[in-house]
Amino acid sequence: MLFKTSFTALVVASLAVLSTYTPQVEAHSWMDCVDWKFKNSKVQDWSDKGGKCQGYARRFPLGKAFGSLDSDWPSRHYQQTHKNPDPNHAVACSDRKHGAEKGADETRANPVSAAYGGKFGRMTVTSVGDTLCVRWPAKNHGKSGESKTTVQINLSKVRNGKDISQADLLKNTIAKLPYKNCMKGSNEDRRACGGCFKVPTRASGVYLLQWRWMLNKGEWYTSCADIQIGK
Figure 1: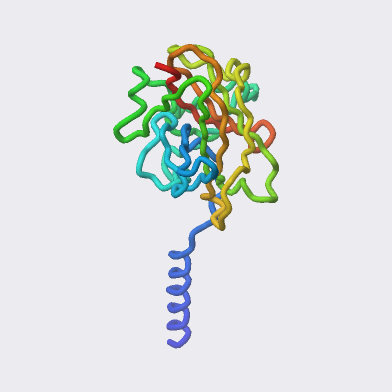
Figure 2: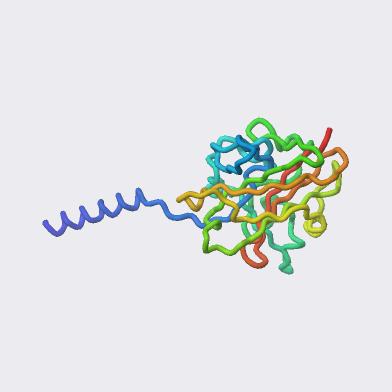
C-alpha cells in the first residue's frame, strides 16, 4: 500500500507541474501597427506605455495582448510559398488558403473600409513626406545571437486599385528596416520592435503597403495594410 500511495502522489505532483508549465513559443512575426505614434518624439519607445497605434494592418483585431496572435487560429503570421518554390511569386497577402503557414485574412476588402473599424483597428491616414513608424513583436528573433535580418516596406504605386503581385511589389520597396531594433526585456517572445520611414510621393488615394521579413533564406513572412495618402 505504501508503494501505491507513493506512486499516486508522484503522478499527482507530476500533473501539477505540467499544468503550470508554459512552453517557450518559437514563432514568426507580423506587423502589429502601421502608424505608431511615440508619446515622446525624442524617444523611440515601442512598448505599449511608450506610444499608441493610429493605423493597423487589414482586419487586425483589437483588444489582444501585444504579440499574442500566434496562439489564435488562424495565426497572424503568414509564410509565403510558391510551387516553384519561389516566394517572390507567392500570394502577397495572406488569404487563409496559401502559404506554408496560413495567416489571418489580409485580402483587400470591398469597400476597403470594411477591413477597418469596429472590432478591427483603424486604417492609416497619412500624407506625402510624413513619417510612418511600423511596429512588430520580436517572437524570439530579436536576441543578440540571432542573425541581422531586414524588414522590407513595399508600397504599391497603384492608386485605389486591386492588390498588385509580389513581383511588382518588389519593384516598389521604399524602406529597409533592421528587424532587431527592439526594446530591452526578459520576454524575448513579446519584445516590441519597430522602424520608421518617410512616405514617398504618391497621388492622393489608397495604396497597398506590405511589411515583408526574411527569417531564413527564402523564408518570407508578410503583413498587408491599406494606407490613405492625402485626401
